[in-house]
Length: 101
Image (cartoon, rainbow, N blue to C red; front, side):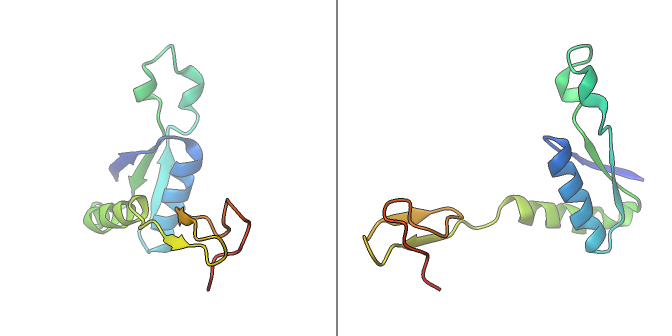
C-alpha cells in the first residue's frame, strides 16, 4: 500500500477514493475519524489520507487527482443582459436567464 495524499476533509477524501476506485485503482480512506482529536494532536496530522492498494498506480492516480483539482472554469456571457458569468453557474446572477446550450 502507498499513501497518496491528504484530503482537506472526509467528504473530499471519500470522493477522491471513489473516483480512483472507479478508474480501476483500488484506494481507501484512512484516518477518517481522527479529526475528533484535533487539538490534542496537530490538526495537520488529523487530516484524512488516501491510500492506494498498489504502488504501481501512483503516477496515474496523481494525474487523475490533479485533473480533478484543476478543472477549467466555464465563462459565458448572458444573452439577455450581457453580464459576464464565471465559474460553474448555469444561471445569470443578474437577470436569472439560463446559460445557453
